[in-house]
Amino acid sequence: MTHYSIGELARMTGLSTRTIRFYSDSGVIPVAGRTAGGFRTYDVDGLARLKLVRTLRDLGVDLPTAQRVLAREVSVADVARTHAEAIDAQMRTLRLRRAVLRVVARNGEVEMVHELARLSEEERQAILDDFFDEVFGGLELDPGFEQMMRSVRVELPDDPSTEQLEAWIELANMVRDPDFRTSIRRMSERHHELRAEGADLSGVSQELMEAFQYAIAQAREALDAGVDPRSPEAEAIVARVNERWSAAADLPVGPELAKRLEEFGDPRAERYWALIATINGWENPVPDTTAARRWLTDAAR
Image 1: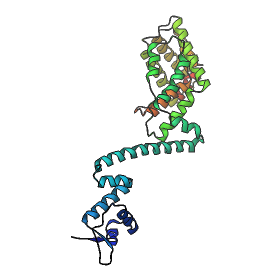
Image 2 (image 1 turned 90 degrees about the vertical axis):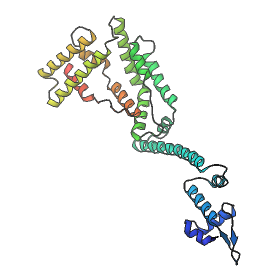
Image 3 (image 1 turned 30 degrees about the vertical axis):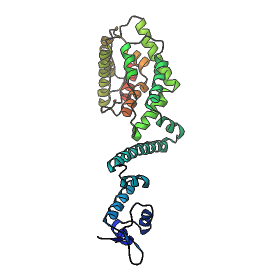
Image 4 (image 1 turned 180 degrees about the vertical axis):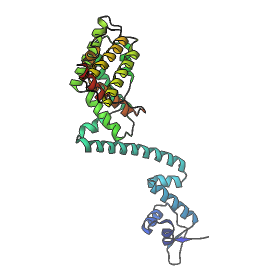
């Protein structure tokens, strides 16, 4: 039977003689014999056990667990599965810490960023629910609209990218901003007033959305063409948009665009959806219409 000295095991496994002696003293690899000079020797089984322990230790498995594997108290598969799950959890934690540190490096905020990043899904949603309760509470809005707003959840991954974490922090700060809440509350109250005045706002959401998209498309074309918002050409564009908008909302033709941009034109409302899209990883991001809105506002005046 082949026997190996500690020095030979060290050369074959890459472990130090000191480590091998420690494993031998711990009973990880049994002594198979001794030389004439009294030095310990180990057999092939000892070499195999040593290689397995080395591999497990390289993978981060602690020595007591490795000894349980050798004693056949647990299988290598079970240990690997459990350890892989632990590593997954550690990696999520590390990626979150990395994202937090990168955000902190950009804006200098530490406690606020760390606090918001550690919130659970329910706690994140509670921030939005509190926002909805304040800006919609006590008002009669289109039921489909309010339900849609409340149904969209914040789904920040366990291991968010820096961009997703930044978007969540910006969103959380936005919906807690008193000025933003006041602005959205004002829009909601105007919506409530229109319903109270008898305007049928149910069933026209799609038409209004298409009218809005038409207005934005017209403004972008004008921007690309270099049309001055104070020119007669811009006036004609506004007239077409007004007609489309009024038809969609079943309202009289008039300065409808200017009024709606004033009442519902806070660009942060659009930014809200852009942030939600980034956080949730939606494939089709919300387009930025800031420049088009600004052109329309100037032209409508």
